[in-house]
Image (cartoon, rainbow, N blue to C red; front, side, top):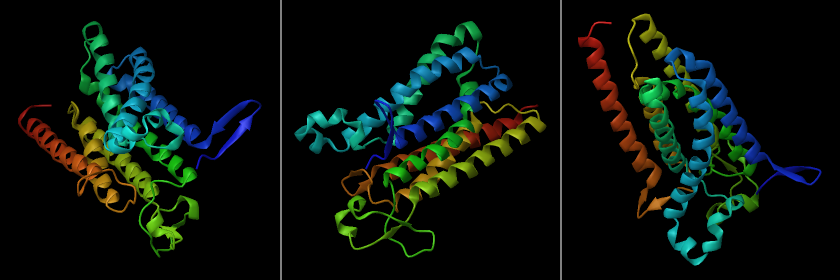
Amino acid sequence: MNPHFTIGPLTVYYYGLIVALGLIVTYLFARVRAPRYHVPPALLDSALFVTVPLGVIGARLYFVLFNLEYYRANPTEILNLQGGGLAIHGALIGVGLGLLLVWYRYRKKNKIRLSAILDTLAPAIPLGQALGRFANFVNHEAFGRPTDLPFGIRIPLEARPPEYSQFEYFHPTFAYESLWNLIGLVLVLVLERRLTRHKRASRGALFAVYLGWYSLGRFWIEGLRTDALLLGPLRIAQVVSAILVLVCLVYIWYRYRQWRTKPA
């Protein structure tokens, strides 16, 4: 399902419009935060034009990789983005690669740390994700299993998985993830304020809090979804999320030890 409207010969899809809004908000919020971490605005401008296409490519390739049997039989569908199939972890890989390329270009001239860029983006990304997730709402996708809870959402028959065709109301997992991201945004800003008060440098800890928090939420939310990517019996997003939570916890612990042992 691809709800849309037209302006003359131009067709505008609500999904793309909402995702674009999330990207714009992320970019503008990062621009406002950039002076705090001495990140040149030109770097963020470059990052926007590099990371967006790489993020889309990464999201698509990741989805195709874990649906390889289908796309081997239907190779022309690989480029059919209107048919759905973008994975957030693939997007993060693409965006991460883009940030590395942009940072490498600017690092010598501006003497900027990669961690400064990541901490600039730490609260901006979850805000953009919180907005962008509602693109799934208009497309009637990324919902969870059937539920009788009062906040369950009605899914049209044509959008329901065949095994759940007799059910009407489902978990709005995209909304759960949106709310979880907003809580993560608050956590990052609270930690940033505490570090500022104690004159401590984050050096990537803010981004680790965001990524660890997001991954923790994605782990339990993924367990509710009906469209999970699988590798055998395992839900790929849960495996990746568990690994990211552990990595982020280790890094946060490492930074905490540095804060305790080094003067401000």
